Amino acid sequence: MSVPFFDITRQNKVVQAQIDSALKSVVDSGRYILGSNVAELEKEFAAYVGTKFAVGVASGTDALHLALRACVIQAGDEVLLPTFTFVATAEAIAYCGARPVFVDIETSSFNIDPSALAAKLTSKTKAILPVHLYGQAASMESIMSFAKQHNLKVIEDCAQSTGATFNGQQTGAFGDAGCFSFFPTKNLGCFGDGGMITTNDEKVAEEIKVLRMHGSRKTYYHDIIGYNSRLDELQAAILRVKLPLLNNYIKARRKNAEHYYQILKDLKSVSLPLETSKAQHTYNQFTLRVDKRNQLAEFLKAKGIPSMVYYPLSLHQQKPFLSGEHYSVSEKAQSEVLSLPIFPELTTEELKAVSSAVKEFYTK
Ligand SMILES: *Cc1c(COP(=O)(O)O)cnc(C)c1O
Image (cartoon, rainbow, N blue to C red; front, top):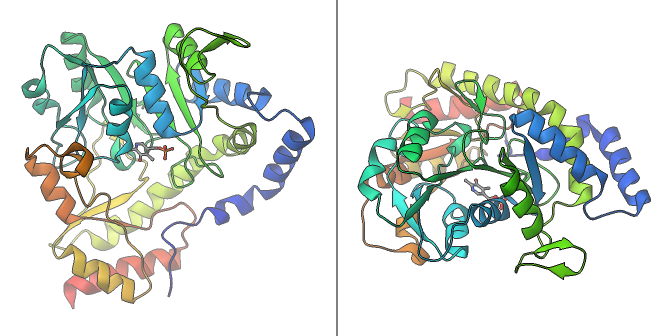
């Protein structure tokens, strides 16, 4: 049996008629840039996350970059971030001329280790950029109190965590800004690139609107060097169809995770993701720690079952950020992690094929 790692077309089919008519109405309107769909989605998304404002931008990477800019992160500044994340988290800091300062992660959650922050603090530290990796919130209580104590901005990377909560509050509602991605594989995906920034700070929201529009407040008058970074009307129209279904998508991901917990819980060579009572997991990825990771991946592949390694190399070991430093928890994780298919529309048959193959590898 061949199982897809991810297939967004299954999700699309359920809402095909609504998407078709939403797209047609955008096409017919002739308004393709910053029209009513983006404006309405911004209101709906802010209401979902529980922030006062949301601003649509061209991607999750741009969301991080523009949020850092709006929080006045600039050349000479240092920003703390986990070394175990997608490269965009660090790129966005570098785009501002600031220095990404890596911090090791917690073994249990794969997220930035709050107890490792203090050792990295200098007089140049201006912000913390926690990532809610795999769809589970970082330890936001500790991070927010550390930030408050040292007068640091907090910019959350919510690219993988749309819909995740910590103590009942949505990720993206804790810091000065929350940065979301609508890349197709994320919890809420569109048909291309798209992103959103949430904030309770009106000045930050206004500054991002200026930055996304060539530094302009008034048409053809430019106050600063900005960017061309807008969420498309067509993407916003699709996202408005899917946002009301996001909680169902997350429920389905959690149900799929439940299957894996049931079948794999007794395997000694497999550590399952740990969900705490505070940080509700959305399972954007279902990531195991395993012995003989590469052999397992090969074994699964031969059976038509795909898996992915997020991420094979920590950022402090990537060419643009090489430092010679070591982060032992992150380096251990990169050699052990393996993500299984978890998207909401997987069938029971497919889930069984995946879980029984993993089980077979360790019990054969
Ligand atoms: C996907 C992702 C991004 C970037 O989002 P794009 O929309 O692809 O630009 C940033 N950070 C993390 C952790 C991601 O997973």
